[in-house]
Length: 397
Image 1: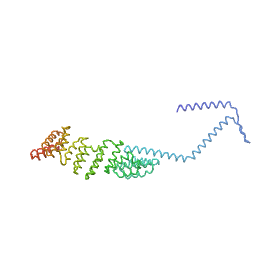
Image 2: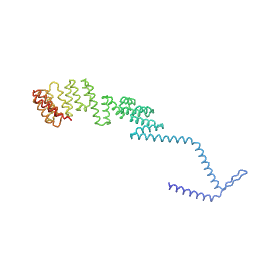
Image 3: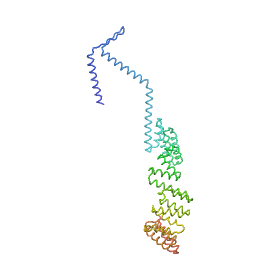
Image 4: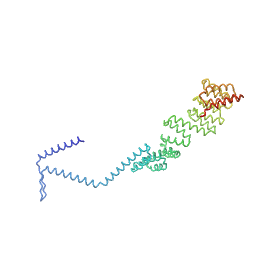
């Protein structure tokens, strides 16, 4: 700024010197005659007078114009001031909302409504703040105040999200249904729908949504696995009185669900309760091929309905590749017990007991199975020893 001032001052000096030099060599005269008046001035003075007159007239014109337009300029200034304050309030509302100061956010959003262009955003922020404060009636009032057509998708999405968060699953799904078909396919809309369907226990829809979100990589694989298993488990339990429906549902599940030890064990248990032992055995054997699991081995003897020998042969084939598996030995012992092969049952159960030193639950079950074996053999003393051992093995805290 100082350098610019110096340049302007030097320019003025040059201009003044130039005018003085030119004026010195100008001997012209200007004669103005208006009877009975006569004005005779130098040309230099006349030029200067014209310039001064122009500047005075220009200044007076500007002054009159400014005075005339002052009310409009004051009104425009006030409008700009209100607009700046409204925008500042909107920014403050956003900051307070994300900072967790919800009361301040709602108050600032109310102030931001002073400008019409802030109406949609301010109402959404105020609704979010009221929702966080658990003021659901006030939240709905803020949402209802959003009437702009370009804000309707945002209003419906926010309403669905907040209602799902507030355990109003039906309201959340209604808001999603109100959206256009394209909007309902949005990723966030499907995530909200998943939460709502979980709350309503619509497990069939939960399973569909989880698969869709998993394809779009919008859900963590661990969470997807848990939700798929949870949904499948509830769907299986809902069909526990209908063997055909249960079987149809089981084979409609993906391979990952059918190979899950937890789901396979549940399906087998339900089919056993409906006297479908062969189907239960196939489910357990298929799951064991992909996931070797202790609970499936415990369930395997229960799938025997009549002839137990095929199951014993199958288990003995497994035993060749897993000779030190205590759960498999326990399953073999129970199968032999069912087939009244007392010697083999005792051998397998005692081997399982020897290998179950670190497995309290298996040790208790094995002692009880041995006690039942000796009861069948009429050896009451040894049976009571194992009953006592099973009781002592229970770790009561």
